[in-house]
Length: 67
Image (cartoon, rainbow, N blue to C red; front, side, top):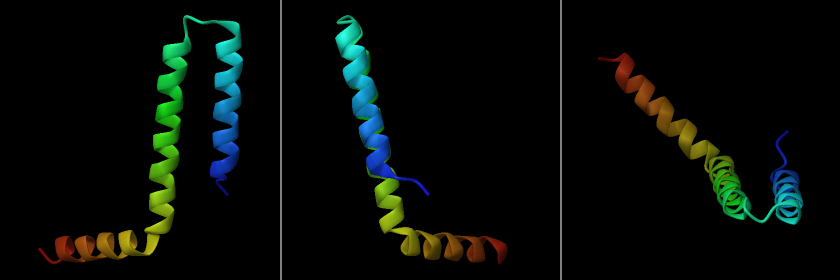
């Protein structure tokens, strides 16, 4: 099972480690954190909208199979 909190904690830990070692890579780490947070937001949205998305894809599949 996917645990978003564990992923977020891991990303923050990785970012802190990289920031302490090297200042030049701060921008790359910031972009990495943003990408990670966006991924967590997308995964959370998909989890909450699972039933609606499933129904939507089923409707699309049924419509396409009827053509």
